[in-house]
Length: 141
Image (cartoon, rainbow, N blue to C red; front, top):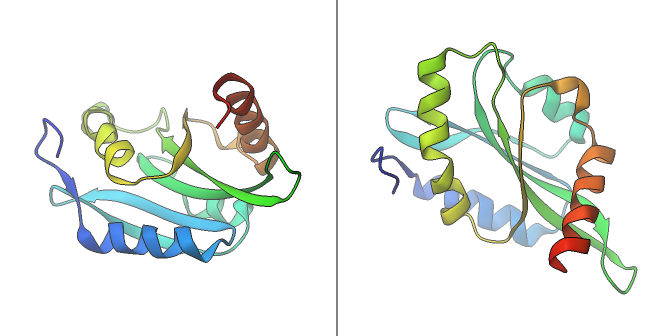
């Protein structure tokens, strides 16, 4: 639980764990609703499908399994926690999400990379893969 008193619902934790062990590209979009972090949308489509689902004027948390290669050059998935924070969001809402961001990072295990973005035009699968590669060099995950 964060200083704001907000925690993730058990349903969102269970869905994340289920998806994590399915080993398929896709993810979940989380939102704050009535002082709980809950699932807004589960998706199995590719990353471009995610972008059309993200609201243009409200923050969201995204947990996305990105296809990548491991050290043995075998197919693998790494979970990216994306903090979606569009500039057009109301300041109060942005502050609310920012103060609760640590709950997601602490509750949902297995996150390889955390990024914050505010512009859909830079978000694509190549961008996420590049960020994961940079993290791999720095952290040797």
